[in-house]
Image: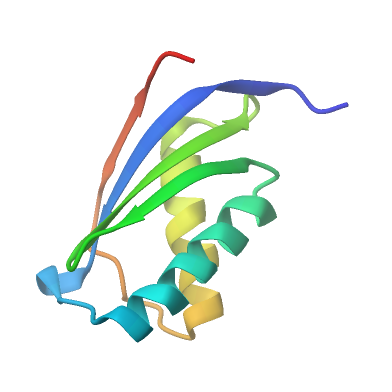
Length: 97
């Protein structure tokens, strides 16, 4: 059984604050879910905004917050077939249950 950490809020911003339309936001949503799962984490909730995404994730304790953030960007980018979709950086912070 894997050991999962706390619930974590992750915010990712599209490169250049690129604004997604609904069909593209759906693809990005699915890519984010897959990216989180590939990191052996659980996507609890994802909220898509025109130029950014909020994720509520329960993630493995073996990953640092930076590894989680960069891993989600990397894995979702692979699924989208875009290596520079997300802006540099992002936000990671723990939240209550």
